[in-house]
Image 1 (tube, rainbow, N blue to C red):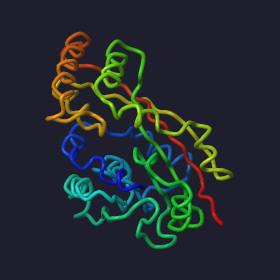
Image 2 (cartoon, rainbow, N blue to C red):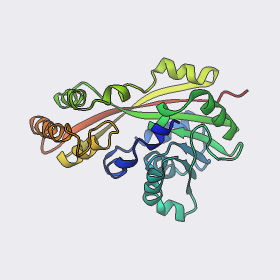
Image 3 (cartoon, rainbow, N blue to C red):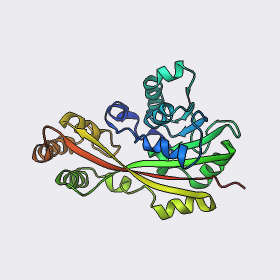
Image 4 (cartoon, rainbow, N blue to C red):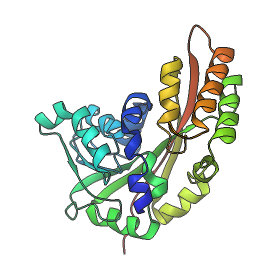
Length: 259
């Protein structure tokens, strides 16, 4: 993980906590059924952010160590998951994908959600192999916003391209299926896709936009025109006061590469 990637969302934590989507429960079922990871097996959630992916594993019965280098996001996760911490099922550590701080062969599953595209490949592969037990598995997943399929989705994509100068740099940085097969190498076992969506009123849509690292913030000359365009898009495409912010959650899984 680079210094920029670990700090990128620091000033957007509140919006990230409130307005980012949860992950489909089917991801945890996939881990149990397809990967053979037992409910209750210890999990390391790498790049855990504000704890959305961590909660997925906690709710599926796993004790989880959340590894997150950004202090503000880790603090948000600790607050969000405080009840699980009281139960002794959750803890967080300040670490990165390349240096998690976790002990050798200490977890049965390494999970990574949205943060994966920030990691350095070779160092991350070595670290995952080190912390996983001999039969441990890796599951990588993220929710990709759909760019087409409705007037709202297509209008939102056009809005980002018009008002967000950093969007092109960040957009489409998630690896393709072929790239993921290459990342796993001989350890690649499974891939699948699950539908996901948020039904958002305008304030929630505004918060979802502002949770994105590339959205211009207050004080930027593009901020107010962007929000005006967002309001116009919402009014034109809403149904019963909401828009369907649709995603697909892509999942890739397998065994670590070991030296």
